[in-house]
Amino acid sequence: MTFSVVIASYLGSYGGAARNREQKILRAINSIQSQTFRGFEIIVVADGCKKTIEIVSDLNIKSFFVERKGHFSGTPRNKGIEEAEGKYITYLDIDDVYGENHLQTIADNIGNYDWVWYNDIRYNPRMRVWYENKCDITVMGRHGTSNICHKKDLSVAWDFRGYAHDHYFIEQLLKFNNFTKIPTPEYYVCHIPGDQTTGYDL
Image (tube, rainbow, N blue to C red; front, side, top):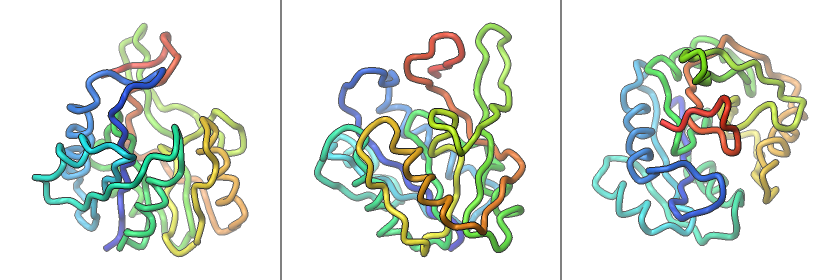
């Protein structure tokens, strides 16, 4: 097993949430199942959300339930890492999707690195085009779970509760010097909370 794709899922209401997330989680899962690279597993962790378990119960994927400990808690992703059987962990938000070559691109470039990072793809509604979003893993707000893949055995954990949880997790990864930026794979960010000019809530 090469990749474990971890999806943390909370379908309750909160400020900035995407619409129609009960349908979008199925879209997200389908985008993983449609990958050209086949060495992966899908792990959905319900963040105190019984509805998530109901939705994915008939699918041939791993699913777990954890008690909700607050918005942006690291508990669901930590559970995903714990249960993962893949060599590498990567992530997908329930309102985003992978292009069909996402995992293949990572597999072709990860080599012997402990972790890699990459740009993501976003939508410009004014130009009506998808574009490569230039990320910066050293600047808060310029990266997220969409931009990393790491070895499971690095023993890193999501331990910050709040909107900057991605930044503090990557700060842990930066302690491991064996990393690189790779060519942009196909992670499509479909919802950008609070951004009405560049967000595209499909």
